[in-house]
Amino acid sequence: MNTFDSSGSLPREFCLRMQQLLGEEYDDFINSLAAPRTYGLRVNTAKISCEQFEEICPFPIEPIPWIPGGYFYPEDVRPSRLAFYQAGLYYLQDPGAMTPASRISIHPGDRVLDLCAAPGGKATAAGAALMGEGLLVANDISTSRARALLRNLELFGISNLFVSNESPDKLCSRFPEYFNKIILDAPCSGEGMFRKDEALLKDWSSEKSRELSVVQKNLILQAADMLCPGGEMVYSTCTFSPAEDEDVIAYLLEQRPEMSLSSPAWYEGFSSMDCALPAGTCARIYPHKMKGEGHFLALLKKDGSCNASSHTLLRTVSSSKTDKNALQWVRIFADELGLDRIGGKMIDWSRMEIRKDKVYYLPEADTDFRGITFLRNGLYMGDLKKNRFEPSQPLALALHKGDARSVISLDVSDERLSRYLKGETISIRPEEATREKGWQLLCVNGYPLGFGKLVNGILKNKYPAGWRI
Ligand code: SAM
Image 1 (spheres, rainbow, N blue to C red):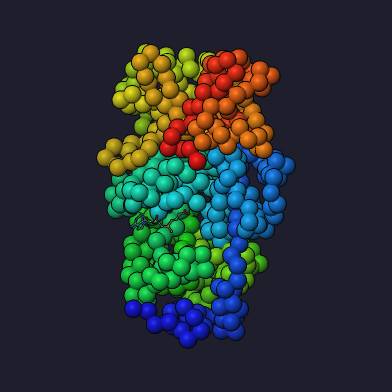
Image 2 (cartoon, helix red, strand yellow):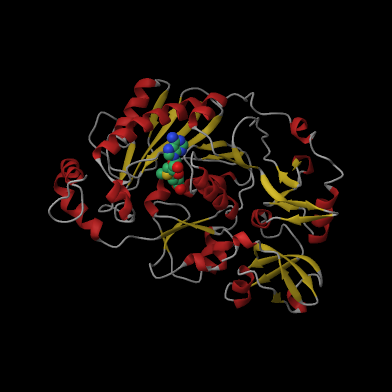
């Protein structure tokens, strides 16, 4: 049972520790926990530039000064109700929680692992930074959370992905020194989220925090062992407990001398704790110093430089499973839609794989994932039916403006979009469609939203039941 302090609902032990940590700032910190929280969104820059987004965004936004592509929005706006959200143009996330992924430099072609990835706040940022090149492995140990993770990555249109539901132990034994970028956003006591989520406050105990520190120390060693020489890793939590933050980093540095701290791009609102670690390397986000919930992050590097890995297979190994004749139905669909690109890049038909009646577009780097429990390998393109191909919703979302020619684009204010998203048929005027019948890609302000089939001015709804709102 927690002992609560006299002034309210905070555990006494937590308050004492924070008082020791913050000294004169303690009162400001406590007051900030009663202040209203802030709301943020991060633009999916793989689909739309910030300038374009600012032009079309119908509600007020203000750039988050320390997050490229991040914006504050007012509390009374519901950005998830706009079709732009269903088109995957942004992710809703607390500005503090956006910070760790913004500090690791991910480039197209990288092999990225997000070890504790659900529901995908950081993985969607990593996936967008890859711009469809390289590989994103997003893992979570919880099956239900891994499903939510997959949904968010598919909503974001990320195609070069592998979503797994494995223990870090298993991944670590299969992928030694494989990834060149790793995100470890560890399970933690959540002290930084007390303002946002009261359940975390009720659940808090100092024993739990100590237990989590053991889990985190184990996870950070496993993550470091999966990092290739020369690779970069970010460790983060949403707690203020030094046992889960700086102590975990100190433990890693002691156990793995090849790892060292680097300085993340510093923002004036970040704080550092007085400790043996070099100043300006571990960043603490306090709600009384900046607009966002509490977070901790440290950026780490492994000595050396990366070599090509033995886990990358030659494409011929996996494509040998694919019946090339069956792919003709996908090609017929692509011809009808005028589709020659996915995510702005020419389709590489050698990367198509058919498993049972489902078609997948595999990532460029075909990795040997045999034996790993996964929810998704590559982009789920759709289903082969008798003599036809039925495209999936993730395919629609992986497409960029200009990837398909049979397009109907409606303005975000058009009430037909909300009817489409509910699964209804909608009527289309002849001048609104590029072709008078057949498969169409419905777009909001030019950004792909989902498929439909046009017959006599009526767009038959192909927005799947599981995606409707
Ligand atoms: N990175 C996520 C984001 O930005 O949306 C949040 C991750 S959350 C802080 C931590 C996640 O770690 C949870 O989804 C939890 O299921 C997962 N987790 C807990 N213990 C784990 C373990 N031993 N190995 C891998 N994942 C674990």
